[in-house]
Length: 583
Image (cartoon, rainbow, N blue to C red; front, side, top):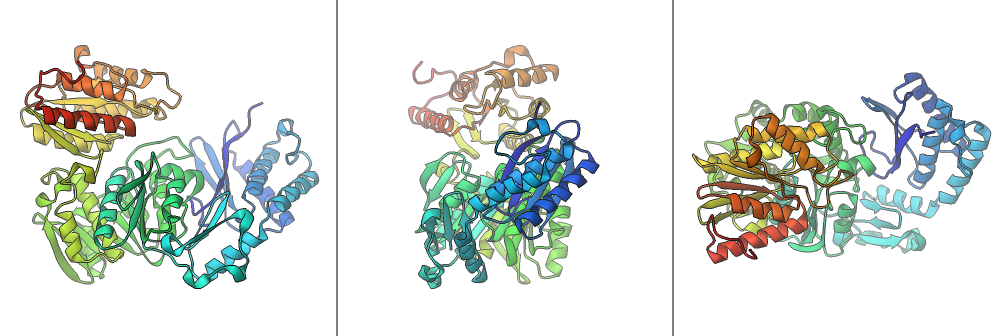
């Protein structure tokens, strides 16, 4: 008999359902959306709380097309017990006692279940940990907690202890503990670029800054770890570094939904935009749910914190206003109605007016320079990067970066390919313009191809195309649909190295191919080369003089190898039609 739930897990920080820690599971099966059973589950959770001596707290039933998400708040040192209570409450409600396993709470015997849960709770309890957390909260100190360690304070103002060697209250040097300036950045596109720009601004301001993103963890621009660190593990790595004076944390949807935020308090939180991606995971099936997930970062803001939001995103405008947080708005047009109205009440905004980036703050307007002179804007063609610049500007102002530094860094950041690796990097190779980017969803790819189209003029576009295997077939086809609007000369279909995620090799490429054929592309213009590096080489072989070659490369290893190849081609004076190195 299959379990009537999946993804039963702990919530270790502020999350989609409430600001507290707790437990959550996703119902599945015929009874997943039954409101009467949800009411029984709720009653059993309340019963379990009383039996275990836990305080009351939020209990959440979030309905979605796949069933329901069931979540409730629980004591910070009882989260494993909370997952057991959650599972027992649902199993008992749907009446599937046959699924019982020895050692777990009995779904058919309430009294016995309470005894089992009480034993779990007693074994898990850590009163010394709770006492230290309470003391930190009373002093307004941020904390980080995982399965092995507790940190009070952040960066150079933090201290970390293992759970097995926690100090007594008297042995903590409380006056030496403090937080550091911290920014959270989330959104569907532009997160990594925005993180890198904020970090560059803070470094120029004289702060020893660390940041985490989908490429790794970095301190003072040097890599400490490589890989996708856009979740709680990356945040903790940054915030526990004893030399860090400021932190910028990419905060991805997956980490928010799996565990919640790693950090319960930040100075500023940025939401760049919302677009369709990752639907069907963790009960998120639409843009509204995705927007609410991204806006969880607002839960980390106190009264002094600022939520930086894209006013050009209509859904975000509505959802962000409901958070009740202090907001700073950005838009491509400084005359956007939301920005004008916000300035009338003294609010902070950033947008473009007459080609200049304008910051409005404390009823004063500041010209930060011509957008076309900012390398990250690609001569003003990269609208999405102009939005990222505006968002980073507002975040940096909240973190204390002065205007002179803003102007200086915006005038040069992106001029060196090392500033923003893997994002809108550009090469000119003997008559072939090459763009390498991360574009991983329809909106991101559309923005990248729009830039390529502008650069191409009357020339044609060549493209790499692939998608992660955990996207649904419809999402994969949607990515292909974007491509045909730009009439590429050829499309090299690929797998994304390390991102098959349950798909067979070539399966995603086959779905993309079928959709492109159905939309009128020719079979001869759709070669398949599954490895990302080989796919890039195939695109270079097919490139002609005047073409714009668009290379969305996603895995870190492949990106480094492709960038090295392009650098070598530039040094060799390669031009279209010549053999590639090694051939």
